[in-house]
Image (tube, rainbow, N blue to C red):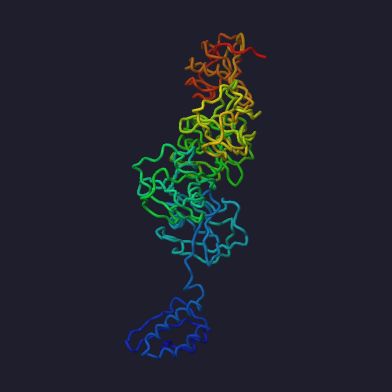
Length: 629
């Protein structure tokens, strides 16, 4: 029956009406309230025409069929109100899926969110919905370039979450926005959950044996069914760029311990998932051994940070990249934990110091922006962009730029049997063992990378490694072949290559000849170039070295760098007259070399000296090498 104060008026005016179906056989009312939905006039006529069918009280099944039909009619009449699927949310144009401009989905279309009223409670809900941990900030969406296209709609504004909701759609909000532009789009920065996957025993964090975490325990992955789509997801989850290969995990020695479990096998990803755990998989494996563990090689993303104007790529003024532009970092709150993350991201070992960026001349150009300040890293992050920070800086100048000094990692490549360390047969290190490189496809681009990694300047040639006698011992392995560098990599290990070689002999070992870099140290005022007062070069200017803590290990490194043989003594620099001019700076003191370094600049030291005079300049006496030509 139809219940309405005035059915005819309701039909004519399209006012909301209440109606229900009654099963007179049972006396039970099956209620379909219209209080949340408004039927238009055509809808009412449809309902009115169907009412006679409801008088067959003895046919309860017919009544239920009609009830279902009414439900479908309601979906038709009310549009998206009743049958609409829940909107989704995503963060776009950020460094990873847990930071960026907020977009919501409605009926298959993505639109942005106006930042009117947007706050941390709203961001908290977005982060929760995405599984990205706690909210860390609400940056303006216009930081994430390019801005949304003008044709893209702004779906909601005045979002008002209490912060406990599971989805953004549960929050109060205003739909369809007319007074906002995309420069006012909302953004969110979440505490990205640590990945549940890692790559171990490889040359860097983006290559190695695959391990997954479950309840705090790490286990391996059986390689049954393992393919490039699966690796694509692993690389994406780790922020390591595109997948490059699916090597067997048994290449990464030592193998996993027998006690370590193999958690999953038969993984079947479509390649678009954000996390490996989202892929189909079989849990708990009984028919695999660790010799069948899965491996992955990813295209390591170029770092979004660099150190410039320093003596090498692992020391200098800190710069970060945003949308293809490089800017500096204000040193407010900058500390060793922040530098630790920079050094890790660059593959430069541990942090050794946080010198002021203004030591690295010339200073940044006035037109160069200062992108971030108040960086606050825990020290465990893999990338600087994962740390808390304040974007867009207005109260810093380039004299306050941050700097970092890292413990430069020893290279994983060397040149042996040549006339000096910048020429010879190429050898690479893997798990503490040195092996050679087969010269199949070896070319100048590959040599360029070797020379760069060794700090030996530009490549000058690719002589056959068999020129450097004696040849490698037959027992020495040939680790890689078919090396294919673009020539811009910092390390040979970043280049495409084939591991484990079976069809090469040591007569085919690769070689490299580099343009040896001029030393950054010299000995002056002595009887020859291998004895005198020590001077070091920085940004084209020569300064002296204070002799505080100066010893034979330090002199050993100076003599090695100059090609002057072994160190014979550490005479005071004031023996070499005339003394340095008062205007000449004293650049470093408290030098602390282990004695094995190739260059003085690789040793620990204190920069910029205030409590030394030129009467305390350091000196060195070397076992004279070859005469100057």
